[in-house]
Image (cartoon, rainbow, N blue to C red; front, top):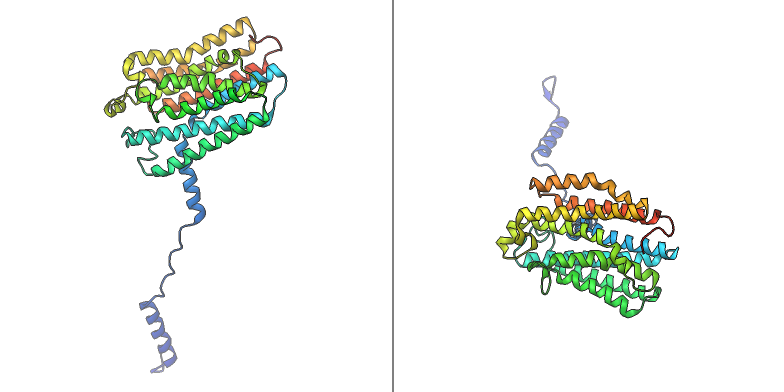
Length: 335
C-alpha cells in the first residue's frame, strides 16, 4: 500500500504474513476416533437383527395363551412366574434362530438373496453367533431353574417340557438337522404350539393337563403357516443347496393348499367354539381380512414378505384368542 509515493513497511510485513499464511495453512486436526457408543449400538443392532425378532410372536403368543388358561382355572396370576416363563421361552427361541443362522451358513444354504444374511454380509462373525446362542441357552436354563424354586411343578415335569423345547430348537437345524429332511414342520408344530402352551400353563398351576394341548391347536396351525410360507419362498434355493423340505416334496400348488388349510382351519375351530360355548371366542375372526389378503398374495406367488406378514397375522390372531379366553364368562370355556 502506498502513501505519497512511499511504501508503508508495516503493511508490507502484514501483507507478507498474510500471503505466507495463505500459502501454508495450519494443519487440520486429526480425525477423532469412532465413538465407542456408536460402535456398541451398531453391535447391539446386529445382534438384534440376527435374532429375527419378527418371529417372536410364535413363542410369546403360546405363553400368553397358556397363562390365560391358567388364570381362568385358578382365578389368580403369579406375575414373576409369568415373566420368567416368557423370558425362558423367548431365550430358547432366539437361540434356536441363531443355531439356524449358523448351520444354514455352514451348509452353504444362505446367500446374498436370502432373507437371513447375518453371516453372509458379515454383519456378525460365526463365532459371535455361537457365543450369543450359548448365552441365550444359558439364560433360558437359568430362568427354568428359577421357575423350579418359584412354582409347584415337579422337577421331572419341568425338565421334560423345558429341555424338550430346548432340544427341539437346537435339533431343528443343528445336530440331526430335522429341517433338512422335511421334518422341520413337525418340530415347529410341537414346539411352538402344545409344548409352549403347556409350559406356561403348568408352571402357573403346578401340574400337567390335557386341555392346554387342545387349546393350542388353532395357534399351532397358524404358527406352522409361518414356516411353511418361508419354505415355499425358499424352494429353489433349498433345492440348489441339496436339502429337502415339505414344501419341496409337495410342490407349489399343494403348498398353496396347505397354506390355506393352516391359516383358515383355526377360524373354523373358533367359529365352532363360539357357537357352542362363548361368543368371546369370535374375537380372532377379526383377523380374517388379513388372512384373505395373505391368501391372495400366496396365490400370486409374491412370496417376498409373506413369512413376516404371516407372523403379524399369528400375533394378532393369538392376541385376540387370549382376549377371548380372558373375556369368557366363568364356566363357559370347554374343559
